[in-house]
Image (cartoon, rainbow, N blue to C red; front, side, top):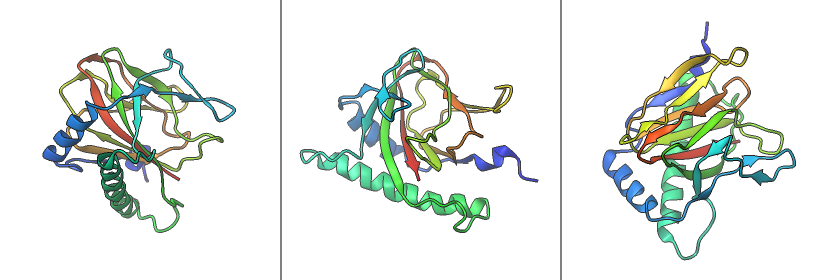
Length: 194
């Protein structure tokens, strides 16, 4: 019998440390904005009591930044390949119904940053698969944590590791959060497939 944890695939060394170093160095010089949560009308709102983090979208075209385009294309290619491995690991063929990547963004959680338990799929933002790439590990706290849907008891905490990829279904079965960051910024990449 398949356990719910089996649908959360963790791949270490998804990105090489030197690639992560280049990406984090570049991201540290970018202008991040306060991240939103989805509103019921499809518009995002900043709600720091629910989500206190900053976002830098990589999929928004910027004619002045070939580096941004490079990272979007590179990460998109790597994640597309990871999708095939994910399907194989669960014996999926075309059943998953994933058509492509909807978004790739960088996230920066400063000290005291967090995101309360939530799921990623909603009527206004239909998502099938969530992908997170952990970039650095020189921070404290900030673990990605999953809980059950009924009692909200934690069943998995993902420890930080440079270049680690975590993939899981975006649906209601996988509530997750990012715990408070207590020291140093936490950088990650978030992407969704639909």
